[in-house]
Structures are given as C-alpha cells and as structure tokens.
Amino acid sequence: MRILITNDDGINAPGLTVLETIAREIAGPNGEVFTVAPAFEQSGVGHCISYTHPTMLAELGPRRFAAEGSPADCVLAGLYEVMKDGRPDLVLSGVNRGNNAAENVLYSGTVGGAMEAALQGIPAIALSQFMGPRNAGLADPFETAAATGVDTVRRLLDQGIWDSQGYRLFYNVNFPPVPAADAKGLRVAPLGWREGTNFKVDPHVSPTGRMFLWVRGGPQHTPTAPGSDVAVNLEGHISVTPLRADLTAHGVLDDLRARLE
Image (cartoon, rainbow, N blue to C red; front, side, top):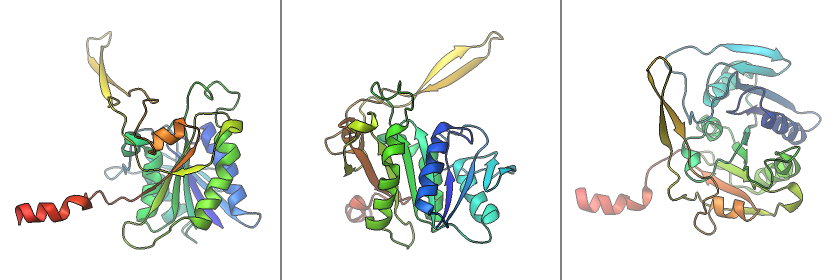
C-alpha cells in the first residue's frame, strides 16, 4: 500500500512521528509512506489552499517533504508532484495535538487535509489526540493514539463505508484524553456542539501603539449531547465520525422548496 501523510502542526510535530509509525505498519513491509507536511504550523487554516501565491516544496529526506503551505496544499503537492508516478491508496492526516471534534472540525487544518484528499478521490482519515488533565502531562501524551491508531485505521479500511462518487466520505477520528490503558472501544458519533465554546478575539495594544487581536478558543471539555463525538471522547472512547465536504442542509430542501418555489 502507498500512503501519503500530512498534518497541520508542522513537519517537526511529535504527532506526525506517531502517524509515520502508524502509516508504516498499515503500509506493510512492501508498502511506501510519503510525508508532505507544512514547513510551519498551520493550525486553524481549515481547508484553505494557497491559491494566490506559490508554495515552496523542500525535500528533507527520502519520501519526506516540507511545503510552505496548508495541509490541503500538502495533499495537492503529494498527489501532483511527490507521488505523480502513482497516486496513494490512502491519505492520513494528523495526529493532531488536541481534539478536532465538534465545532473544531470546521476550522481544522488536519480535517482540511483529509477533505482535500477525499475531493481528489482518495480514501482519507483525519486523526487527532484529545488532550486533558489525564494525558497531557504524560511522558508521551500521544500514547493512546500510538497504542490504538493502527487497529483503528485497519478497522476503518476493512469495515468502513467507502464510496467513490462526488463528495465522497472520509473519516474523522479522535482518540480520548486518557492514558492508553484506560482507552475504551470505538464509537461512531456525529459532531457535537459545545455551548459557549465559540472562538473569540482578545485585543492587545503593542508597545508601538498598534492594536493586535489574538484569537482564543473556549473550554474544550464542555460536554456535548450524549453519543456525540466530544461526549464519547470524554467517556474514554475513540470517536469515529463520517464526514462529507457537501455542506448542503439536505433535511430542509423540500420544506424550503415548498416555501420559495
């Protein structure tokens, strides 16, 4: 199997090292793993692409590249330059430091990389390690992702639903904020909604008198509806959420047609 991996925390992020290990195990002894990751951290860029300026691509080692761009840029670089001799069978994005659950999904560069792969017709999975009081201070805060990541990806590849038309399915995985020994099984879960956890700006005046705004997130451990992604993560489960890039609110189409047409 040929696998392309990327992330949004940058080429030197520890979570990318975890993902490289997972990908090599999945690819097998005769497989190939290619890394194309941002040269600098790209957290929060979503599905952004560098449409108005070029992206520099640097080869750091065998099958290992850094791109001055977003995770989606990295996927494009992987598909159309680094692996132009043969497309990957799978794209993995992560392992993100921190959760990409609930509303975070809409801002996540990790999810954006997987989304771009899906739009390009490649099976894709985004993986993130939820952080909290029970695991953030561990010698390896990614130990749950490292211990359960291979099995999670294999189960999705073997038993997941993989379509191939239009806005194809891709998957968002969050490993729970607990030590590996306390992690529970998989739970298929929809996106949750954390009440009062919207992003905000915090204004600061620089020594030169200029105003700067720092974007700040809200509490990450606010419970969501039972059975949704954050809720099952806080219970110790690995959440698996099927996603599509199609943002149409299909459930209201017929009602809206009746009202407007």
